[in-house]
Image (tube, rainbow, N blue to C red):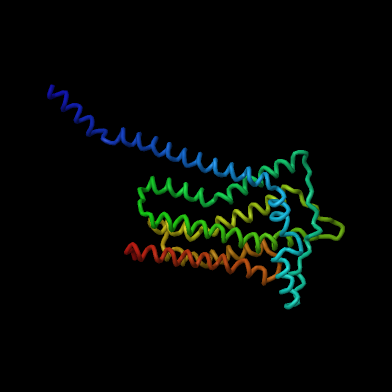
Length: 282
């Protein structure tokens, strides 16, 4: 009998973590599954609300940036009159948006409702995401949790507003009124118009999360302030190229878009510096 007990002990020493690791894997997977399910339910509910309010979503929000009376277009036109820059007075109101598919409008309605659902419940999605990350990394600091969710939500909303009220009008009006020949009339497919706006709004919203991403990368030693500073010149070039692509071909519009993005990068450097100093790292 003693030999049997000794043999079992030796086997346990050889494979001490086999069962716990397996159990932890399935526990993490189950946790993740429920976080995803709850997020999907929340998005679905808000998507239904958006679907039932299509006139507000489409007429008041999505189609508004191409109209001359849109607040941004009015302000830019007044600035253009003062500075004698005619290009700042947009006139994309005559841009024709057409549907070229039998089910095009219905599918677009569903797609836009889904995007609206994601945007409306983004704070909750952020909460579910952070809950899982904190579970995996065993983070129990409530202040860190509150900071992450609150700041992340505010940055995302700021990115949405910045994109919707500045980048979207500049892009839609420039591309919508651009002509290579007077013989060609612009008629934009509904899917193309919606896709452009959705990618800009959500893309910039995610880009504005950069300080939060940098915070966690710096927290776990994956980036340093020195690394971000060394890459600053390359980032400036990239931001200038992005600004030149999505804005009309005048310097003022490009500066209006590029400066906030550069400021965001500088904030990220500052955040990483604070994290490194707080952790006592050089």
